[in-house]
Amino acid sequence: MELFVQMFYRVSEYSEGFCDVLGDMFMECVSHGNNEQFFTPIHVADLMACMGGNRLKPKQSVCDSCCGSGRMLLSAVKKCAEENDGGRLFCYGSDIDLICVKMTVVNLMMNSVPGEVAWMNTLTMQHWRSYHIDLQLIAGVWLPILKITEAGDTSFIRKLENAMEDNSELKRSIQSNARATQLTFDF
Image 1: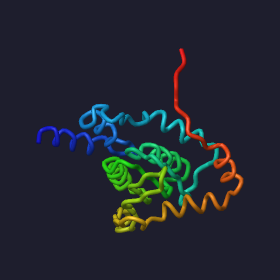
Image 2: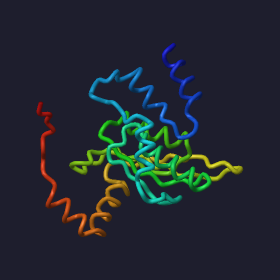
Image 3: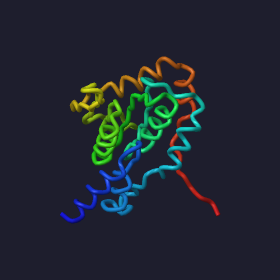
Image 4: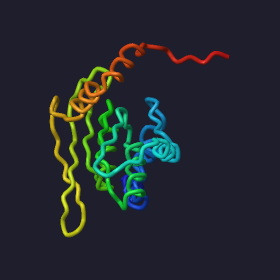
């Protein structure tokens, strides 16, 4: 109970400004590095959002197919909000770990970011559940509304398939260059 109170205090204290407090808490207090669950450092995620080249515009979408706690998505939204007077992107995220999916959902909801987070294996496209976050304007404040859909009921997979069909050159490139490789370090 004491650990829960400390975690609740830290999340409420530091969760403003598109910060991923849940990911840090998870690594520090829950996983302790087990299952190789280390998330991208926040400064690196922010740098990657800046290096995208294109200016992100509100209502565009951004996708992270292995979202962890949603850190990369939050960095992209932060960049968009800074450049567009608080405007939000629509975030697509997915992960094979249900705890990570739920952390992303909570992070997006705490920051009033619309999107869909799918619990799925993005390599096999096997889908188990999706969490849809919509925003409703109530008394001048955007409040998140959560809807949960079950296996197969997702726009995330259709979005990926449509992106491949719309860009036949990208599809051919992926098909011709995709091959299984083992990462090795030779010394």
